[in-house]
Image 1 (cartoon, rainbow, N blue to C red):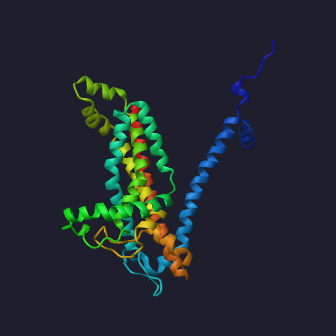
Image 2 (cartoon, one colour):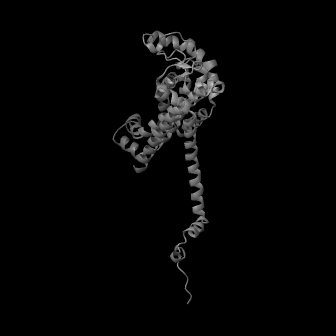
Image 3 (cartoon, rainbow, N blue to C red):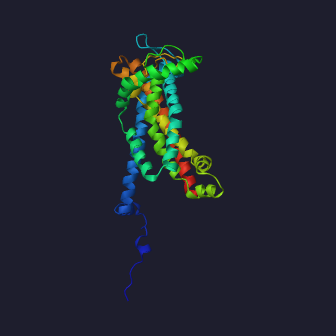
Length: 328
C-alpha cells in the first residue's frame, strides 16, 4: 500500500535551508500580500520620517543661531536678520482656540441630533451635505470670508459684541475686518464637518443596550442621550475635537486671506495678526538668504511637530472609544 508524506513533513524545514524556505514561502499568496502591505506601511513611516528629517536639517542655520529663543522672541525683521516665532505661534493658537470655541457646541449639537434624534433618512441626507463641506477648497472659504463674512461681522456682529463685552480687552480697539476674530470664525466653519462626522459615527457606535437600559429605568430620550450616550462616547468625541484642532492649526489659504498678516501680538481679537502657515505661504517665495529661509522652515518644523502630536492623541482617543464600544 502506497504511503504519502504528511503535510507537516512536507513543510518541515530542511537543515540549513532557511534561504530556500523563505523563497518557497514568498511564493505563497498570503506571504506575498503580507510583504506588499508591510512595504506600504513602511513607506508611510519612511515618508513621515523624511519630512521631519528634511525640516530639521534645513532649519539648522536658524536653530544654531537662535536656539530655543526662536520660540519666545516677538521680533520678525528680515532686513536686520532677527527672527522670532512667537507672534505666529500666538496667532495660530488664538485662531485655533477661537474656532474650537465656536465649532464645538455647534458641531456636537449637530452630531447628537443626527445620531440620536433625527429620522434616519434625514440624518443620512444631512450627513452627506456636511461631508461635502469638508471637501470645499480652503481658498473658497477665504473668498467667502472676505466678501461675505467680514462685511457681515463688521456691520452686524462686532458692534453688538463691543456694546455688550466692550469692557473686556479681547473686544477693544478698531475693527478693520481682517483680524483674529474673522480668521477664527472662518476656521470654525471649516472644522465643523470634522467634528460632526466623527462624533456622529462614535455616537452611533454606542451599544443599544446602553440606551435601552436607561429608557427602561424611566429616562427620557434626551436624558438618555445626554447622561448615557454622550459620556460613553466622550473619548471619541474628544478625538474628533483634536482632529479638528489639528486641521485648524495647519490651515493656510483661508486664514491668510482674513487674518491681516501683521506679525504683532495683541490682546484684542479684533486686531489683525499672523499665523505660522500664513507667514510661510506669504514669505517663502520671497525669502532671501539662508537665515531667512531657515527660519521659515523652522516655523514649518514647529507646526509639523504640534500637528503630529495632536493627530496622534486624537487617534488614540478614537481607538480607545471604539474598543470600549466593542467590549460592551
